[in-house]
Image 1 (cartoon, protein in one colour):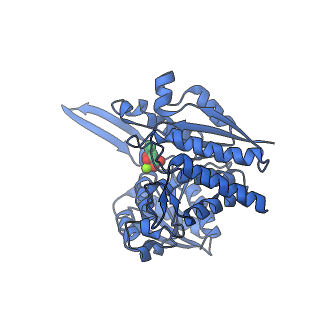
Image 2 (cartoon, rainbow, N blue to C red; image 1 turned 180 degrees about the horizontal axis):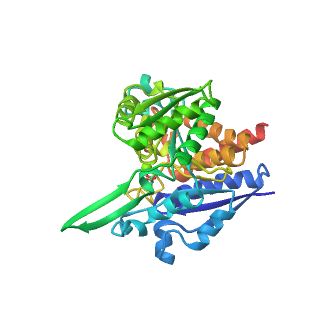
Image 3 (cartoon, rainbow, N blue to C red; image 1 turned 30 degrees about the vertical axis):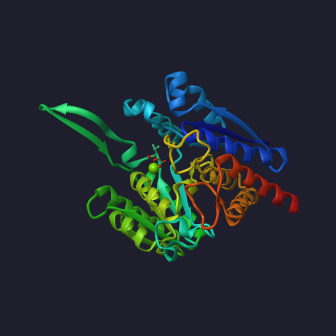
Length: 363
Ligand code: IPM
Ligand code: MG
């Protein structure tokens, strides 16, 4: 049976990096390493322009039928004046929620030879290998009531940070499982000194921790976690947190690695179906210039192979090729490696595919 991939390029640099990932996927297809079928669909601003909605019915149908979705990026100034519910981002949020992709894995890894591209001191970040787990279908992003309304001649804006016990339990279990496969250290990040929802979060994590006696669970307030991440990032291994906190902390963690252009992500549901996307956005300022970094997107494809298809070898081939291209000093302009050579998106993709070919021929 073929693995069914839905490719949603979206907007801005999404189009360029989707093309890079498609070429990498085709490498695995044409060499009969993996049996994959790839379909493409519309999402985000380009879907608004062509169909009037950021997530057309047809795209949602294809997404539900697929084993995994590879997602570029959405958004741009052209659609900035739309109401939130009509914006390109609403397409992504609806996909996450319709497919129940509650578990978002955002690894922040510093590759060999890249520590000095970080804005932090090299010794703080070299060999950093951190996993941020973001709850993705609840919390502040999805809670009701929400909206802007008027009462007593006053305007109010309201969003709600809420979780039920079941939602907390499943992200807790998922994160204990991830911690078990790594160094068995899990740090749950919340704001339990102020928020009741965080107190419930903490209680449930404590309860679930009794099922994982070998995992060391710690709790940290989110403000402190932000500070600790730039003070001494290597104290962490796996961090798990609420949707909005995770959105913020994962951008912060991205900069530890030098560039947000390096960070892939996986969003999974209970049946291993997943959406895989770079953590970065559509970067309209550099779109169409063949200069964006395709690595986060290509690594997202590797995460798809690993998490949705359990094809660890294929995932490792991608990781290995990327490391080897970096080792040769090739990079895009966001990651100016010392003594390296800055090349374009297409050219860096070519280099990665050459390395894949090399690994394949060597076998
Ligand atoms: C992310 C992005 C999205 C989010 C936007 C594009 C809606 O920032 O995936 O981190 O806020 O979740
Ligand atoms: Mg974000």
